[in-house]
Length: 511
Ligand code: NAD
Image 1 (tube, rainbow, N blue to C red):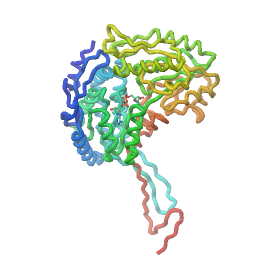
Image 2: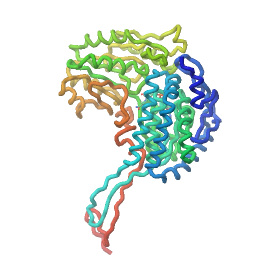
Image 3: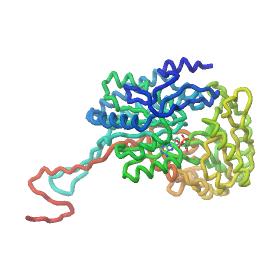
Image 4: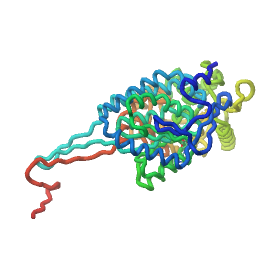
C-alpha cells in the first residue's frame, strides 16, 4: 500500500496547508477551512485554507502587475520556462499521479496518465511558443500592407472540476503562459491538494527564472471564488470546466460584462454499434468508456445505440464483460473501477437508478451501493446497464456515475437522430467496418458533437486535437490545434507606405 504521508511530504504538502499562492509566495487564506477527504478510504488527507474576498483582491493585484512584465518576455522565452515546468512534472509524475488517484479516486494508471497529459501539453506549448502565427493579407489599396498579429489578453481565470483535477489546469495554463497571459486557478474544492501540489512543483522553475510573482496564482475555495472571477472585469478570459449549470451561471456573468469565456461543460456521449462492427474492438471500448474513472469523465460513455439485428449479441457480451469487473481501491492495479468522488455523488447514482426504473427502464446489469471490507468510505457503487428509451428525461441528463443506457435502432439515420437528440454535444463514436456508415456519421448530417470517433470509444482524447463540445457542452475548445487563439487577442494592421491616402472600397474624399 502506498504511503500517502510520504508522498505529501515529497510534494511539499503539510497537514494544514496554505491555499492561497501567487507562485513564489504562499499565505494562509482568511476564509473557511476546506477539508480534503479521500473517497478511496474515507480518510481526511489535509486541511486547506480558503480565500476571502481580501485575499482575492491581493491576488488580482499581483497578477495584473505581473502581466505587465510577463507579456513583454518573448514568446519562445516563455516557452522555455514552460519546458522546464514539463521537466519538473516528469520528476514528480509518480507522486502527483498517486495523489490524483488518492484524492480524486481514479485508478493509479489514470492518475499517472493525467500527469502525462500535463507533460505532453508542456511539450506542445513549447513548440507553439514559436508558432503563434498571424496571416498576411493582400491589401486592395496600392502600397499598403495588411496583416494580423496575436497579442496576449491579460489575466486568465481557470475554474476546474474535480474529475481532471490537474490536467485541465495545465491545458489552459501552459497555453496561456506561452501566449503571454497570467493565470489565476480556482481548483475544485473537492480536490484542493492536487492543485497545491502543482503549484509547489512549478515553484522552483518560477523562482529560478525570476518570473514575476503573480504569473501563476492559486485561489482555493468554493463556488463563491469562481463567481468572483466570473464577475470581475479585470479577468480577460474565464475558462470554466464543470457542470452545465455552473457554465450557464459563469457564461451569463461574463457575458453581462462583455468579457470572454471558454466553457467546457457536461456531456451525454453515445456510441453507435452497427451490424458490421468488430465487437472484439467495440465491447472493450464501450466498457472502458462507461466504467473508467467510475463514469466520472466528461467524455464517459453514457449511451449505446445498437442495431436491432445485433442487439441481443451486444447485450450478452456486455453482461459478460461487466461480470468480470473488479471494484475497489483504485491504487491497486487489478481493480478496474474505483469510488465515486463523495457520498453526494452516490446519492445522485441512487436517484438516477430510481428515475430510470420509474420511467420504465430495465436493468440488465444491476446497480448496487457496495459496503463491507474495502468499501468503508461509502463511495463505491457497482457499474450498471439499463435498457431505456432515449426520450426518458433522466437519459437526457448527465449523471456523473457508471450507469450505461442501452438503446435499439433500425437504420443509421435513426441512430444518428437518437445520438444527436440530447441537449449536450461533447463526444460521440461509431463502431463500423462500413465506409458509407462511418463517412455519414462524420459528415454534416452525422454527429453534432465536438468530438466524433470511428472504431474508438468516446472517452478521453489526445492533447493534439482541439477539445470541447457543442450545445450545452458550452462550445469552447482547449488544448491542441488552434485552441491557443482563445488566449490571445487578434489585431489587424494596415500600413500605408505610399504618398497618397486611398480609401477602401474606392471611396473618394477630397479636400
Ligand atoms: P461543478 O460544476 O460542480 O464544479 C466545477 C467548478 O466550478 C468547481 O471549481 C466549482 O467550485 C466551480 N463552480 C461551481 N458553481 C459555480 C458558479 N456558479 N460560478 C463559478 N464557479 C462555480 O462540476 P464538478 O462536479 O466538479 O465536475 C463534474 C462536471 O464537470 C461534469 O458535468 C463534467 O461533464 C464536467 N466536465 C467537463 C469537462 C469538459 O471538458 N467538457 C471536463 C471535465 C469535467
